[in-house]
Image (cartoon, rainbow, N blue to C red; front, side, top):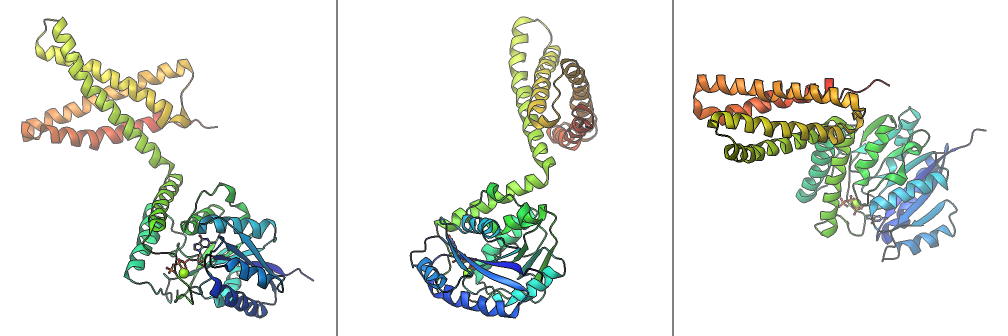
Length: 392
Ligand SMILES: Nc1nc2c(ncn2[C@@H]2O[C@H](COP(=O)(O)OP(=O)(O)OP(=O)(O)O)[C@@H](O)[C@H]2O)c(=O)[nH]1
Ligand SMILES: [Mg+2]
């Protein structure tokens, strides 16, 4: 006979003493409807001051399928510890995390198992598909929109599911949850939800959303409200979304570094022009035009040298040029390209532009020339020629 698949229902609790008993009982009833599965309940409790842990310990005396894991405060750290315990100690085949307040209806579990049998790896009950609904007031709608849609959707770029903020989901362990490096997940609070969707997506998991109605809390109090913890949660969500965005688009981080190096080069050129202007004026009896030509030539060469060094060590660190011969060749190519892209072309645009439109547009035309031509040109040349990825 085939061994039954083990489902670990992972319940996060903080002050849920009135809800934990009914939840364990409800899960037992659902287990009876799913005879092909062995149901286990793991409660992760952050030392709730209301004694939720004691209630679980008492129930566990007569229920061999009920386990308690005591965790530090924080939904994220608690769930991460729970996922690990479920896989390592309880040998789970599937993990189903859920809240303990009945806002997510545990009666969806048989349908979620059905979807797993159909071949999906992660089944997400969702408030954002047809038939789904939430009970949020204006404040919670707003915070949900900010975290779910703005930060996790647009900013982080998590698009595997529409509802990224809920706890309730069914996750296959083999080749999916066991591929997530939980020991490296550095999240404390509610942001664990979207982080898990992202981490699971990296394993190649197949996702499906099913409609769910997010109802009222059965008893006790919500932990989401305007408090210091709430501010910390928003900051953590922002930090984590930013990390995910950069991880998903490595080119973006490179482009920002390239911008910083270029900006620094501009400052060198700007200050250098002032310094060399003074030095040359004091040394040579040349006309002002000749003085400024050489002053700017020296200043821009300093900027070019700085751009080359920082781009080589920082922006394109992965493609870094290190052999001395190559370094010299690339540096000369970089100079040539900088004279063309950074001096000849923008100066021609400024010259022609002011000739046609008038001198009052000089600074505007320079800005357009730099951002419209020099920046994209340099980005292209650096990537394609100077720091071209070496085939391995
Ligand atoms: N172990 C643990 N569980 C927590 C912690 N904070 C919240 N929880 C549990 O996580 C679940 C979700 O918390 P809720 O406060 O209901 O938050 P929510 O459902 O996202 O938001 P509301 O709609 O405002 O209720 C509940 O079962 C809480 O008891 C924590 O620090 N540690
Ligand atoms: Mg709740």
